Structures are given as C-alpha cells and as structure tokens.
Image 1 (tube, rainbow, N blue to C red):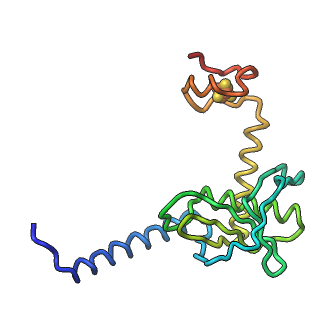
Image 2 (cartoon, rainbow, N blue to C red; image 1 turned 30 degrees about the vertical axis):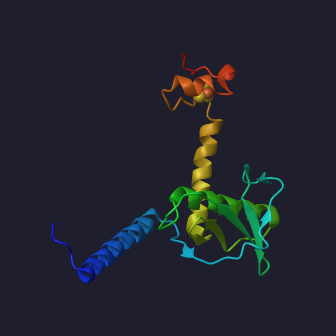
Image 3 (cartoon, rainbow, N blue to C red; image 1 turned 180 degrees about the vertical axis):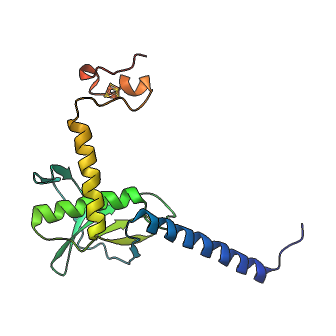
Length: 176
Ligand code: SF4
C-alpha cells in the first residue's frame, strides 16, 4: 500500500478527531446532562469523608470520595478509574448530581458544581436545575421500585442467586 504523506495524514486525523469530538458533544446535549468542563485541580485540601452523608428528606445516603471547600462552597468529588474518557459518562454525572443533592441537604449549601476525576482528566459538572430534576426523577423511580411489593428478578443467572445475601428471603431465587 502507498504511504500517505505525513501532512495529509495529520489533517485527516485532525478531522477524524474533530468529528468524534462533535459527536460526543451532540450526544451529551441530547442526553440533557451538563457537558462538564475540563479543569486542573490541586488535590491538597480534598477531605475524605469518614461517614456517608444521609438525608432523611431525600431518603438517600451516599459517600462522595472527597469534599473540597472552595470559596465558602462545599464541592463533592467522585474519582473514577475509566481511562481515556473524552467526556464524562452519564451514569457518573447522575451519581455526582446525587452527591450534590446530599451536600445541599446535609450542609444547607448548594454546591454550584461537582468534580469528576478520571485518571487523565478532571471535569467540573455544573449542578444545574436540569441535573437536579433528572436525579430527583431517577431517585423517585428507584424508590418506587424498592417500595413496590412485586419486584421481579432482572436476570437469569443462578450463580448470582447462589451468592446473594437475600436468597433466604427471596421467592424468585434460581436453583443451580
Ligand atoms: S436471590 Fe433473589 S434477590 Fe438475590 S439475586 Fe436471586 S433473584 Fe435477586
């Protein structure tokens, strides 16, 4: 195969990267979640929580990896191990949004954003009203599932049931 000259190849790669970036941005906008800004942070001053945060008002408990105080605000930080991320994952944004809700409920201060830290990038995610609504909706869904009397098994894996701590209470356990 003929070798592509170095300059056209570089231009081609640039356009491929640009298209991938724009697609990721479009997907993010369609999900309705904040896109996140890449930030550079100094991890000094990040405080590990001793106990999980609990809000009876939200009926929610959770433990962000760190809390950091910045200009009088408390910012939750969640650390993830996924590598080479170009944009934060929706599930991680939702989890961080739940921590923002917990911080607001427990400390009476609304965090303007939370931080998602991946091994090679750190993002600030705005705690927007849209993110709050989305997290509240997910929580409501989860809580109504949990309080429902008829929760159906969501898998066909006998091995999973064999190792399950609720097997003795469950009327849907699979036999091996
Ligand atoms: S025993 Fe019941 S609760 Fe546990 S994994 Fe199986 S179906 Fe789920």
